[in-house]
Image (cartoon, rainbow, N blue to C red; front, side, top):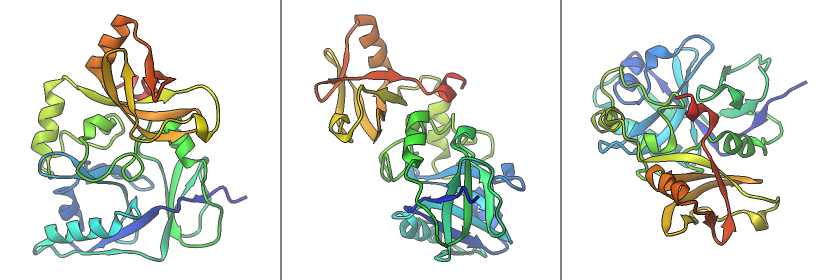
Length: 275
């Protein structure tokens, strides 16, 4: 039985050429050398000021790096990578023949490549393979929101947010030991300071149905404190970007957390507790 399902809003960017390794290694936040056969890395491309421009997964197959990225951002990603190309011997293009799929169990595939989701094992498997017929994965957002995993394009846009704000350090998205990458100085300084001001957490609300869900971007409050705002929304839960110091003060004051007049409960994702 085929367990693979399509993620409709993902695209694949192909990077080929003899300089492809050194080219990407000097740009992206994760260490290309950490990629092993049958695996992939989760990474991002930052602004020089350390904010996320794009996030993606990178797998290697047939002398090419395949970048699984947000479909709407794919042309801008190709353009940005091309700006950094200079004299590097690489070719960068969107591969219109490939699709991105997911599976909750290890898939049996005859074409393409499959790998465990490098962010979190509980997210299952990713597949990059030739386009074909198949069901759409309508539960993908439900799974990642329930696990507390934010994602570019769904939760935030380009140049909006820092990697630590969306837990990318705890989701295997940043290497602080690999050497230079765009925005490294800012990203490393924020991590070294040891005082993380913002995190993405899970917001749980009672009831089912869209009529009970808070709006994306809606403000979270607790008494006199403004904690943050809503990112993704799924059945019974949402992701929220919050100020940790204000949450601590709200808890100390015994203040109830609300969003658009509705009560919410905030919960730290399990993977962040282990970080």
